[in-house]
Length: 340
Image 1 (cartoon, one colour):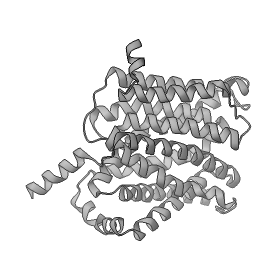
Image 2 (image 1 turned 90 degrees about the vertical axis):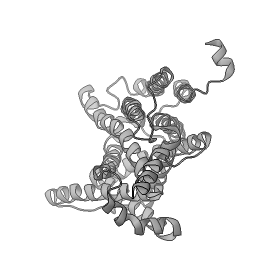
Image 3 (image 1 turned 120 degrees about the vertical axis):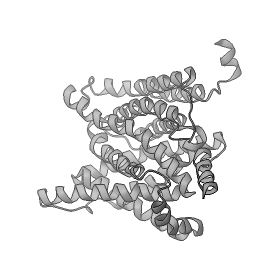
């Protein structure tokens, strides 16, 4: 028994490992997916005139997608059968399952705020929260299963990433006539930005918990399934109360492609769960942010909204975020280190 516990503790500490370059590339793709998902869920919320309903649809379809994948693959299917026994053994704290509620809140933030404040401002708020909490999560060792010191390079990387998001979004401010953007008053804008800010603060906690849960179960598919299951349950409860109060419950009013946010979210979450154990919460967050900025740039060109602005500041923000990733990883090119 003691040996089994020791093995499980070692597994949690070591995590699910990938080579760092591969993990970062995967996180970058996840960030691009987040930008697409944010736009899809926002548009669905507008079409349905129901932000909670849009979040429920996204999480519900995601749950179906990850369950179907798990049942079609022998390995995940076996892990899914073992799920009740692992939960019964309490190999990790039950409250870690609140990660699903955090994910549900993030999807709600997408549906509720991307439309009125714009994708750039949404990203700024998310980045602010992620950078503040990512350092803490790595310091206590929740994400990678080992403590990562708060070094100068990691603090500098976090500050560079935040500056990059501000620079990339500054063109959006100017295009909308100042910080009120799109006719919103400053007070309402700040209030709406608090939603993704809080979501960003919690997102690093979610990534850390899911990374550990995936390690215990031996599969990121199971941690992704648990995330969508608990998140869907929370959103269903909230939407049910809202539907009874409003007297309407139509969730199928939009075109089919707006309902792809949920399945896309399963791929994003699985990639983040794998990457955290290899690179830590902060570096994973930086890679995801870089992908989000790049994805936002493509979306602003290919699928522009009223506040879309693409220019030198947007490109500079993406380049600065890439530099922030290198600083945090301690992988600055030799010529740049010599200049420093």
